[in-house]
Image (cartoon, rainbow, N blue to C red; front, top):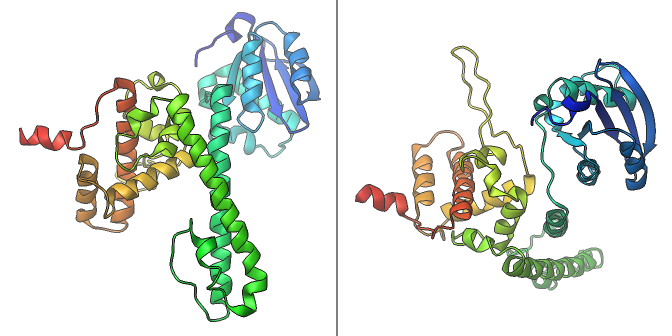
Length: 354
């Protein structure tokens, strides 16, 4: 991010957003603290505050309130810099950490060079609404999984065991399988699991409608077997604008699927992935990779690539292959989206044969 409006006024404003109050620190062009104050974390209060300053650089940390606050900052003609929390060690390492100090630290780091904060770009209000739909479904899925695990472990604790079955049909199928002594305690949970399954299906039908009407570009992505409406919509909403990525291959790193690096001299240890970016989308891409490499995955360049990695062997070969396929899948989906091409599962194989 460039210097923006901050170079015109020389003023930088740090906002430490709290759930009730926001601490404000204003740094002038000479680097001195020009003002400190505390305001309510409400649109009207922040609008009055920010309207009283000329166009400036406003630095805030990503959090629950940062999406709407960053949009408000931009609306008022300021430059919004939303700091990546992974880059804020200068604040968290402070032995005298408090809200007032944090606001000043945000302003000072943003005044020197906003790029040090690796600023993130919040999505539009419309995308945020659709993402809430996906996240609400994910919350229900996690709740159902936790309830199923509790029922199974409770039955095991008395020496019994429930038969295998899909999570979607668990609440209905296990009604007649509960031990009599646990029926009173667990039967209500099976009813709740059934209700959660019904609600999850409602969300999934809504997601299908959104893909067909509001986000037709998802059709480009669902050409790939193993990528459904849920994963396609999550991908589109997370990236929002495919053209903001200069090359498709950087998308894998953006989603946290790139291995971490800690090279020093001759030492270059093998580390796990960075896990940056959207957790839920990364989980969905990994799930799609499991399907591609699984027994029902159709023959494709992606599948052949993953199977070659598994064949090499070594510790965690299968898991490394799954992550590598998920990374390549992210790159492929971005490429299909931005070019509008028809997906050819064995394009590389046919080119090599030719």
